[in-house]
Image 1 (spheres, rainbow, N blue to C red):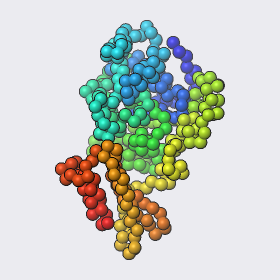
Image 2 (image 1 turned 90 degrees about the vertical axis):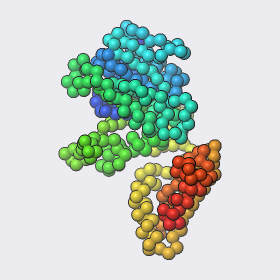
Image 3 (image 1 turned 120 degrees about the horizontal axis):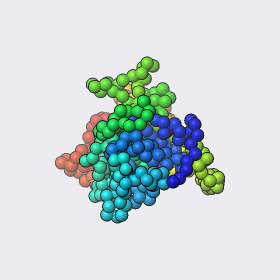
Image 4 (image 1 turned 180 degrees about the horizontal axis):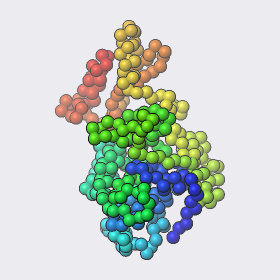
Length: 364
């Protein structure tokens, strides 16, 4: 069995001690994400004997080539009662204490990426869930929400920590590298805003029975998510020194920031590398209010439209304006593939129908 050097108050130690409903481990390459997620899963499997757990990745090859192999490195062999792993097997691990660990892939075959969900795991109930590399493009935000809805297990806790949930524990553990998809928009950015004292309406936080925010003594919302993130250096004691030196030598610029330092704001391939969410993104309602004020006070307001036809690939329409300071504001648009040019019976209408509706809404 593998060894793992764990230091008090280290990134891995803090993650392993987390008792949040959603526990997020992110950051640079090889900072211990997958290993820590497996160790946490094994501890839950031990302390909640008879529980039903899920360990998942986006696709079958990624599942078997990464986290399943990592799990087998850490789980004591004498704990495993059975684990058939052939191509046609169930890929389900049964432990001697009665716990079942289901190794599954999330993407549902035959579904396109632009559909609202791709998950094939919506008929099961789990006590705990681990999803590795949740930023994989095959996983969408609705998959994340749907899986949260599967956490209904009530297995009794048999450990010795008085602060652990008595049943379940109904925890969702996820890992991720820095990305700019829904993971950042819906999970990381709202959490960062909360840490900085700003409220983001996308923050996953406690509410009462009527859906109203529950606030702490400082009148701040209480997140149900905890984020643990750090650079590759956070795990240097468990890595060979030449591995980090190789990354330092070969990774430059944004790639170094993203995959070595674990920074969420670093991305390759941007037309404008200086783009940043904090600087260049504002609340949509505030932008529309600004636009309405300019409509009333300015006779020569400049409106900007952009259109790129697409059918097999997404069509794109952008609607914006230039304010009195010369700032270009993009306030609305549409981006979707396989949308006909015009069809009022198509969901939300065809391309021209959507464009006409937006132009009417903004009096263009």
